[in-house]
Image 1 (tube, rainbow, N blue to C red):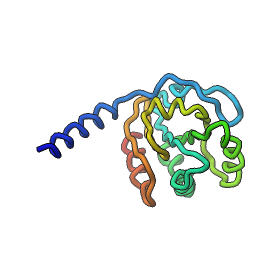
Image 2 (image 1 turned 90 degrees about the horizontal axis):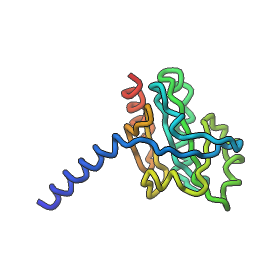
Image 3 (image 1 turned 120 degrees about the vertical axis):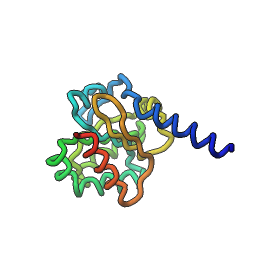
Image 4 (image 1 turned 90 degrees about the vertical axis):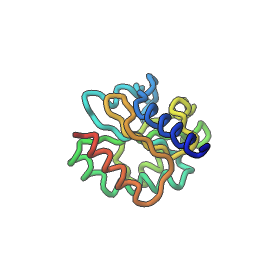
Amino acid sequence: MKALLTFFISILFLQSFSQTELPDMTLKNIDGTDVNIQNISQDDQVVIISLWATWCVPCKNELDAISVVYDDWKSETNVVLYAISVDDARTVRRVRPMINGKSWDYEFLLDTNNDLKRALGAATVPLTLVVKNNKILYRHSGYTPGAEDELYEKVVEFSK
């Protein structure tokens, strides 16, 4: 009985979370320009947000896997991926060299104080969200090979 109750509470939590809005928060992009998070998913634009860090191997694996198919995703669904680094003041200097070395073609933002990470309740990275009109429609923590296929299915679903 306790397991069943826990299951239903989990489902209710996930359902209520799935309608959560992005917080009204401003981060800096890689060039130091302010970007308000709520301005990235307006007008029915489907956006992927990936919280990652330079020291996080699963994060880099996920961004590498998406990079292989990202051009196709963009042309088929018009999706945009925002890779938001949660590297702190000590490690943020590694972000730009990693982006350049990987040739990732994403939009990059910096969450050096982990304000967004905390606001989203992210215990770990990678945390991947699909957002439309500032509503978080899908949330996935961690990465295993092939998870990008499920992510793409969600992007297609929400692009309609």
